[in-house]
Each structure stands twice: as structure tokens, then as C-alpha cells.
Length: 340
Image (cartoon, rainbow, N blue to C red):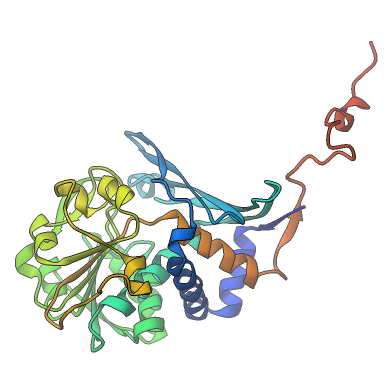
């Protein structure tokens, strides 16, 4: 039988254990898997693009466990009463190919994206970072803020969104939790004085959310909004000025900020920094940029974390037809076939 974690039980887990505690635990899973990056199968995600949005499959395997995530991205969905992003994912046993764990991943993806952001910032941002600017206050924003507090102690946020209602929502959700939120009238005002800048906008367009003149020395940029061809947030001059770190270059060159750059534009893979194969931040004044598009290994980590931490919340579902004789699949239906 396949174990299943549905939306209600995912919510129960988060409420029971606490968002920040789960984010810290998940960061550990991510770090463990990033450190063994070379042991995974890796391909860019398989994407189906339409004028409405994108539907993607994100597979990977470490030769013991296989995983995939199904995820969509439809920027115009909120105006129609739907979420921009929804997802579900699965773990399977490589030995026999059977699915062993199936889970909702709309909430889980928000957790894993935030945990990945915080992990990379913990490694790349200046240790004295205290203020984060958030450009975009949508569905991901609260999770990002909580992850950065859990991993870096960040409690001061400077926020800008073109939708004032989104900022009001963010204040309503985070201020009671102890965050100090300064509402900015523009992106430039939000990033002024920030040590870390998180960009997470939803429009499927080649936009310039941050310009080079806004970036001061020593800033860490957590660029997580670019996640499909034709969608960007950063002025290319920022990429030329800073040190760019990515998850998996073949995917990021298609979907990330570096899609704006030449095919040989130099980047560093984050796993190399974790293992000591490459340098991270090299000076207090260096600008570091995490050009994150989300990668299947992070979903693998998130699914492992959810599976291990929710054994008491999972239910069993009959997902695999399993006849007594493995060669006699027809035996499951033969008795139901009406006589002629």
C-alpha cells in the first residue's frame, strides 16, 4: 500500500510542529542531499507551456529512491479564483518501482522553496545581515520570512508589492508573530538599507524588478521569481556585477535570470560551495545572487522530510493493482466479467 499525506494532514503537521521548526528540519534534509548532489540523476524539468501558464514534471533519483513532482504555474489564476501554483509529488522504491509515498505539494513546495532560500542565504549572506527587503508579497512571502528568521534571525522586513492588498495580508499574518514590517512605496525604497533582497513576483514576463543602481555592496539577492522561459526580475547588469549561484545550470539557463546572459556566462553550483569545491562569498562587499528556479532534488528532500515526520498522519491508499499471481493481472477483473 502507498502512504498518502493529503492537504488536511499536511496542514495538521504544520500546525502541530510549527512552521519554523519544520523549515529548520527541512533545511537539514536539503543540506544533506545537496552535499551528495553527484549521486542523483539530473535533468531539466519537463515543461508544457501554453498561453495560460506552464505544467511541469520534475523527476530525480539517487538509485534507491525515485521522486517526481507535478507542478503548474499560472500567473493569471488568482484573478479567476485559482492559485498560481499547485503541486503534488511522489516517492518510489527504485528496487521494485512501487510508489511508496504520495503527498500534496502546494504547501510542501512553499516550505521547500523557503527552506532552500534560507539555506543558501545562511551560507552566502553576510553574517551581520539583519534586514530583508521583500519584493512581492504573494503566497510565498510568509514562508520566506519565517525561514529567514529560523535560519538567520531576520525579523525586520521592508516590503513592496504592486498590490496593496497583498502587503496588508502579509502584515496581518506576520506582525502578530513578531516581525517588524516597513511598507515601502517602491522597490527602490524597499531595498534601501537592506542586507538581503528577496524577489518573488508572479508575472510571466521579462521584467526588471531590480536595477543595478539599487544594489549596494555586500547585498545578498535571493532571486526566486524567475522560473520559466521569458520570465525575469533582475537587470542583467546586476548579474555581471555579482557572483551568481544556481542549482542546476542546464535548467537555470533556460528558466532563470541567467537566460538573459550568454550561454557561457559563469555561474557556481550551490552544492559545490556546501562541499568546499567552490568558494561562496569572498568578501564583505561582494554581491551574491542566488538565481533559484527550484530543482527536483529539493523536492526529493522535502518529500523525504514530510514522509519521515508525518508517519502518524499518513493514510494507506490502494494505488497499485497487486494480484496474488504477479503474472495474472486479469484475475482481478475476470470474476466480474459477465457471461455471454
